[in-house]
Image (cartoon, rainbow, N blue to C red):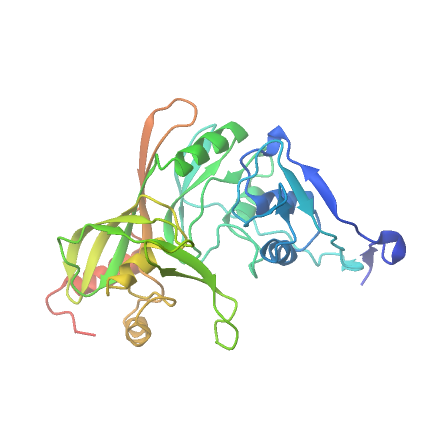
Length: 335
């Protein structure tokens, strides 16, 4: 197959370079900044050099979700494009629109389906944002405001202007938004258990285990220097036989916060394949629950241009609502 030849050999030897962040990129995630800076470099490689610490921001290590600011200096290690890229090999993401809850000139609120990553990377070729950009080729600016896990459905915000992105992300960082999820917890959640205030620590699973290299989170002591304070508010919505449907509001946006906090209380989320009851999950799959029962139900924030208070809700998708309804019936068979 005829291909595009990339320069290789000594003449194309890459070197470390430093890039200063401009005003137009202020507030952008580091991974997105690099993906635009290193056009043609595979996303998996971009995430690898971030995780390894080869990318530095102002001489310090940084994570993929670090927000860069105007004037920041980003160290970019040597990277080499494949010597030969076959025509059509790097296929663009398929164009796809998603159910729109709200849209104006500044932002889009969509109802993200489960099973779709919000962006490409770490083994995922594309996600919501890449598909949305393909479906709207004339859009000058589309960026994710925040993230949802791949298997989590619900309200997701996309900014249509740089100014909107910056103001919305400031609200998320300042804990000025209201983020409430619906989660199905295993067992009878105590109605008086309304606040979980436990620090969380991110780590990678050690080698030798099946999940070696995967990112995980655990509860640590309040005096642990690596612990990040994490606060979750819990309200019982419905009792569903051997389960409890909870309204869970997070005051801090830590990785896997809801999943780990609920599991730490002995009530993991039904279907959670990382922190849940694995034997129970197998039984639930036979009953129709094919994924984790976690849904980003309601999001409240101030409009980035007008300041108007906005609140959007995404109803439970059919797979979760049908499972809940079956367990709400007195005749529901025990697991």
